[in-house]
Each structure stands twice: as structure tokens, then as C-alpha cells.
Length: 75
Image 1 (cartoon, rainbow, N blue to C red):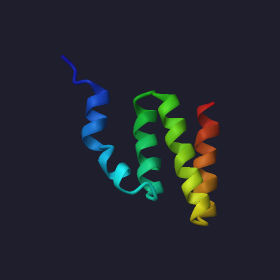
Image 2: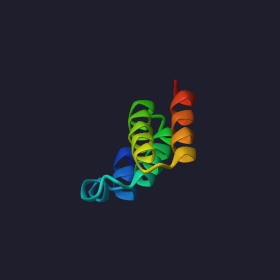
Image 3: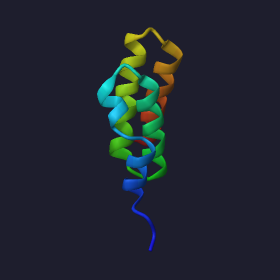
């Protein structure tokens, strides 16, 4: 029996740190990469968008553009 990949993601990248501080764009970005590997494009796009928004707010233009590029790749 294979482990449930969604549960594995919850263990590896818990939602708790995000609930504590949503300013960590990197958390959203890396969680979106995990969703990509799990082939959950909708959740990946949502997290890439959240990361992009936060990067933009933080003035991290290169990271912002990279997150937007990842969203385009998923379309």
C-alpha cells in the first residue's frame, strides 16, 4: 500500500508555519513545487500566485518574475 501523498505533503510542509506568518513567500513557493510534483496544478498555481504577490510586496522583482513564470508553465 502506497502512502497518501497529500498526507505526506502535510507532514513535510505543514500549514502551521504559513498560518503563523504569511509573509514567508518562500514557504508558499516551495510548497507549490511540492504540489507540482504531486501533479496538483490548481494548488500549485495558488501557492505560486501567493508567493508572487508576497515577493512583489517585498520588492523582490526577480523572485516575483520567477513565480509568475512558474504559473505560466502550469497553464
